[in-house]
Image (cartoon, rainbow, N blue to C red; front, side):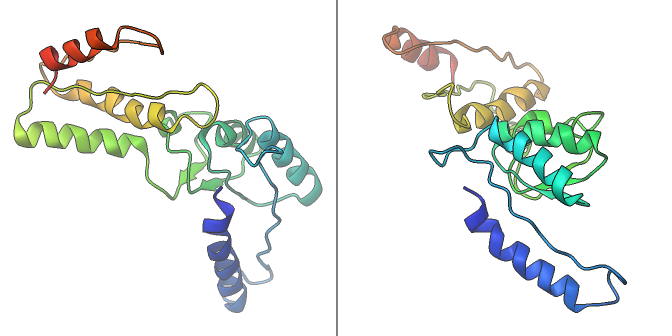
Length: 190
């Protein structure tokens, strides 16, 4: 999903660096594309690490760019950390990528993170002195990249830093008692 967005920038950056001989004297930047999607065009946590290993063995890269999807980026980041190679990605926005102590120590996100969304939530709560709130994640498919889950995770992890705040999660499934959940939100949320 990301290559159409970042590919042109990668090409332009490589050309710009190579045009300036003083930046990397004796070296040239080149890139090799590896597809981390499955046969349906969906980010694949199975394909991504296999492609990364193939690229590492065949091309001995100095760094990796991408993948962007959370579940694809995580195993690739673990491999690149093991290989002592940096991974730069426009994605990997999940809260877990903030941990630079071990497995994601060489991962750099060039895009937004959900931790930042959580920090914005904290600032809004403090600015407006909000004391009650509700966060409803209405769709969390266990397949795919789970964008709603990871976006909510940033808030879920950061909001407890606001004093006098209780974070509670209520799991509900299709066919569940939605009126109960709506009543709970109305009673307890802002």
